[in-house]
Image 1 (cartoon, rainbow, N blue to C red):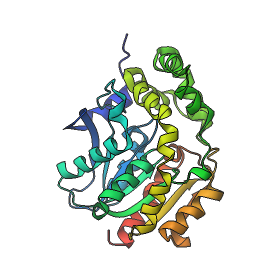
Image 2 (tube, rainbow, N blue to C red; image 1 turned 30 degrees about the vertical axis):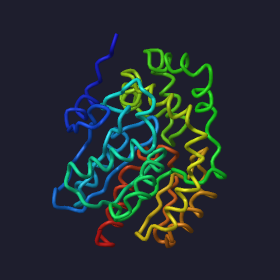
Image 3 (tube, one colour; image 1 turned 90 degrees about the vertical axis):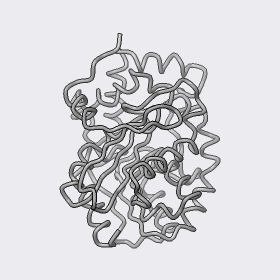
Image 4 (cartoon, one colour; image 1 turned 120 degrees about the horizontal axis):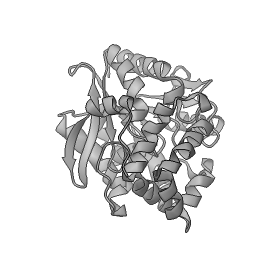
Length: 299
């Protein structure tokens, strides 16, 4: 039996718009002045525009147009059963299709987690569409990333059974624990918040999760190419990092991104009281940093 989303998630979904793409319908959030600078907020695994709900609303009050898609397989978007639709190049093309749909020639991209590779892929084949970058707890460096144990298990023989449990009602406490482990807020996160992430898995988002886990090593094999793309990309960048991330450690990754993107010290922000899903921990601060970056650079 499919569970009906709670009131807060229902309200969020009611604000979404939709675009038909190659693999179904892609949902997206679009808020803020239409003639303002545009920031595309790209989620990762296993999240959606729900991750950016507070950041986007706050950006809109700061004179920034915030667009946050639910990539195919996530959030309110279609969740096909065919794994190939979840490849990095395919998701990257859909981000570009969204720009075309909104008649946005170029934007600032804020990318988090798996959203990093999706955006880096786009920057490689369409660099002119990237006005600037905000890097949030992601990676382009295989030597500095040890995938969490959960990802390896999901990609293994027991993965389908694990994901079936995760997507069922008994998976709700599993997702709550997962977000407790990867946020500073921990178990202080409201159940309605973590249910917003579980709902997508309950509706079939486990397919994208499985595809990601199975293809993880192959995806990491492309990281050297992404790092090269970043070194060649001549755009301003800022780094916003949750200091408590137990997997993507700021001590190693922030300096590497800063070197490749030529980021000045003033544009490097390591936030205390924030972990991997820093959008849940420090949304107002993230919005403030991005808005100041966009406006000060005339982006």
